[in-house]
Length: 295
Length: 295
Image (cartoon, rainbow over all chains, first blue to last red):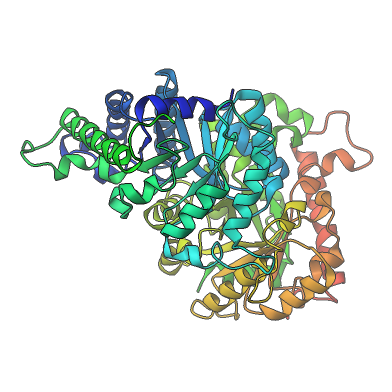
C-alpha cells in the first residue's frame, strides 16, 4: 500500500480535484487579512474542513510559506498536520532535488519530520539516484512523490522539450525512466509510488505521454487561473482517474469573483465560494472525462 | 556591483576555498553534541569566526537544517545572519527551481527575508524563465546565484550528460544559456551575476567547459570527502580565481582525523582543525593553479 493507492481511491470517491493551498496573503478574503500570518492558517484550516469531501487531496506550495520566514513555515507545518489528522492526503510541493546524504536529509524533513507530507514534488535534474533516498522512505512509510516531467511555462522549451540524439525529448526521457522505475514500486491499482508532474502542453504530446506511461499517476497543474481547461486536463487522466488536477488561485480567490458577495467577505463566505468552485471544476473534469471517476 | 564581484575579490585575497556548513549533528566534536540543535549553531558560529580569514565564502546546505524542522531552520537563519554581519559572503545551497509567482516567493524568502543569503543555488529544469524573479532581486540587491549545470554523481549521466540532437549535452545547453544570460548581467571583473554549479567530471569536458564559459563563475563541489582532488578542481578555475571550491565534511570533521586529539575534542579544537585543513586545501589549490589566486 502506497500513498498513490489511497489517492487513487480518493479520486474514485471524490473526483480528481487537488486544492492548491498557495495561500498568498492577498488571496485571503478581506476580513481575514487583519490577522497577518495567522490569518493564512485560519483560512487554510477552514478550506481543508470545507473541501475535504469535494477534493481528492491538497497541495501546499512551500514557497508561499518560506517567503514568510519561520512564522510562515510554522503555518506550513500546521496545515500539513491538520490535513493528515483529518484523514486527508497532502502533497508538499517542494520541488527539491539533491543527491546522496543531502537528499536523505530532505527526505527526513518532508517524510518524517515536522513537515511530513504524504507526497512531495521532486526535480529530476541531478538524475535518478537523487530519488533513491525518497524511495527508501516511500517503502518504509508508504509515501509517494511526483517528479517534474513537463511543465507548461514558456521556459519548458529551453531544456525539457529539447530533442535528444537518441530520440524523444528530455521530458520524454525523464518520464520513461520514471515509468520503468514504477514497475518496481507498483501499488495495488497499477500505479507506481512515484508519479509525474505533467503540465498540459499540446493535444498530441499529452495524449502520447498518457498512453506511454499508463503506470504513472499524474499531478496536473495549471487549471483555472493559469489557463488550462477541463478538456486539456482530462486528456492527461485515464477515465477520470490516474491523476489529480490542481487549482489554487481560482479556488482561493473565488470569493472575489462571485456575484452578490457581502461588502467585506469573510472566511466562511470565501470557503463556501471555494467549495462551489471546486465542485464545478470537478463536474467539468468528470464531464470532459466522459462520465464517472471510477474506471 | 554584484555579489560575484565581492566573491571574486575575496578569492583574490583569501583563495578559493568555500566552507560548506552542512553541519550534521554527527559532524560535531563530541563535547558539543550534548547541546542538541543549539550545538550546531555554536559550532557554525565558531567555524565562521575561525575561518573567515582563510575562506572566500561559506555555503550552507539548507537540507541539513530542514531535516531538523523549525528549530533547525532557525539555526540556518541565524548562521546566515552571522556570516553577513561579519562581512562574509554566504551561499544558501537551496537548489530551488520553480516558476512565475512561486519563484518570486522563493526569491523573497532567500534574498530578502529571514533566510537572506548573498547567493543561492538553483535548478534549471523548468527553464530560463524560472531564473527571472531571482535576477530581479539580483539587480535590486546585488545578489547572485549558481545554477546547476553538471554534477559528479552517477545520476548525472541520466539527463545532464544526454546528447542533444542539436549537438552537445543537456548540461552544455544549460551552461550556454547561462553564459549568454551573463552577458546582460556582467560584473566589474567580467563574470556574470549568475554562475554555474560544476562538479569535476572528466579532464577533457571540464577543460572545454571552463574555456567555453569564461564569463561564468563556478561553484565547484565534491572536494575532499567526495573524492575530488586539487588538480581536478583547479582545472575549473581560471588562474586560481573564477570559482570557489567547496569542502564540507572533510573540514567539519577534521577534528576526528588529526593525530594527538584530546580525549573529547571540543569546539575550539575542532575549529582549529578545520582551519588548518582549509589552509592546507587552499595551498593545494593554489599550487595546482600554478601560483597566486590573483589573475
